[in-house]
Image 1 (cartoon, one colour):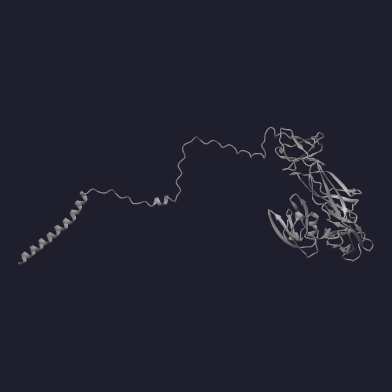
Image 2: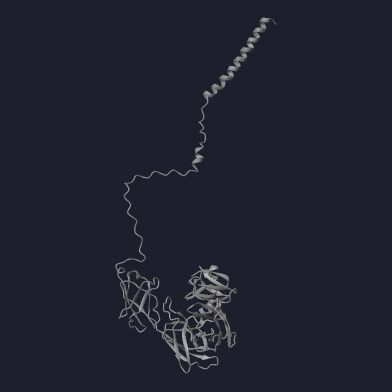
Length: 444
């Protein structure tokens, strides 16, 4: 092939390649222009995911009238509904069981003891308006308390006292022979009417009867325990006696046993000199305080002899002298013997203000409808150090329920020699806690 032919062939090859490349470019362009275009695809928005976590925007409130000024808040409601009637005093009358008016009867609200009134000469009473709707109680010895009655203004309220009852019985010695002269007292009383306020505990009377018999009438209905004591015979209790309105409980019996004799000497704790004319007497022998055992006086040598102390069981004596601190000596026990001895040291009154010395837990007890209460505790005493508080209910002493013990027995059991232990159960806020303490000397 000649050189000219070769150059022509090369030009044709380059031209073919250029046309082919142009065709590859034009054909896709024609296809794109002629085919229909698809709808544009909108990409997902990220704000949508964030909107699920955010709270929805509140809707705009609908158009309304201009807001009026809000009225002032209403005053709190009164404790009881106020009406025209209740603005007036509450009036009524107190009657005896036979329907006769009772002048001088005491009337009060059970829920508000400070709201009181006294019946006039015609038995009529007037309570202030705030007593409207309260449960009123009336009392007047010798009757039992009236049942709590809901009173209201605008009507004539009637409070009817319950009939009194009586106890009949006898006092005998250990052989069954009558004790002709003795002191009789009401050791405890629990009224039968709910909410009753009558209190006859502690009343005492002397009885002289050849048959040793007694009748105690004009008693409010309820449960009683009586005590009796006589010369040389320490106090003894009856079994519980239930007294109903208008009825006499019969066959109450108290046995008075011969007591023992306590002898000893009272001396000055510092000088060891005898203390002359010191008084020695039984202490807390009864809850009523009534006791026929005469006190003893020390002679020139400080010697004393107290006749009629309990022949068995723990008891306490109280020693008094105007120049010395009063001293309570607990835990004495004749153990069935006819006599025992106790020498006692007393300390002169100082400038510190303390006037009494005793050995025990340092708590003052008092009776209540719910049981034996701790009325107070002495600062620094075992009870205070153990956490006992005023208002605690004493439910057990060394495992024995106080419901089975009179108040005087509870007191004697808490007293004792220094260093000895006693365990008590106290109830506070519905929970009973056992506490063990060491008895100690308490000065106050």
